[in-house]
Image (cartoon, rainbow, N blue to C red):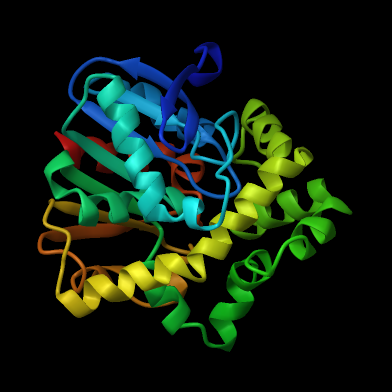
Length: 292
């Protein structure tokens, strides 16, 4: 059952601009953050199962979907996005909450947990390793797998201009190549329509590239500063990764996250990178078990 397309998003103003957010369910607050090249609609396949026991707060990240775009690369940092998430949650009446993030949303999520531990009850991270770890492990095989990290981080307007020549092709090739079946079969038509809109709006396209420009610069600096200072995530942390996903190509995800968090558990999901859409039942079961 799908529910998010029937919910009109609300607009919440933050210090970095307005955020488009959908809410559904009852119970303790659970903030769900999407990744590239998607919107909050990626959570729709698991929303009903999670909403039975949680109040789900599902925004479009800054620069994606219907949310405002950051004004600079620095304002596209995961630190600034984390601040906006906290401001949004406070506006909705939630000071402390559970948190799950996939892909770029996972990077916002772990940054929020590092910078604002008092706000995070429990944390789930889906199919990523920390940003600085990805760059450090960028060998030939991994660079071919995540070529977009270096491409999208190139100075404006090079990647934007190239993608604009064939936006649907870039999007659909990216999506399908990261799934277990190498197809678009797991993506609902309404979700794909939202993802396509991301690539038809030049301001959003630039914001997505700025997200990756921050990921190649200021986000790495923040990660390395935390490592040098010995700071770790203190919230109980669940790590899920696709058995054929992106994180599994770099290292054993749990081994890496044990260096970044004090209380870590996790397991692979039978899927590629897009865990909630490729295997919603296993994803919802794992998240519900952890957050309950």
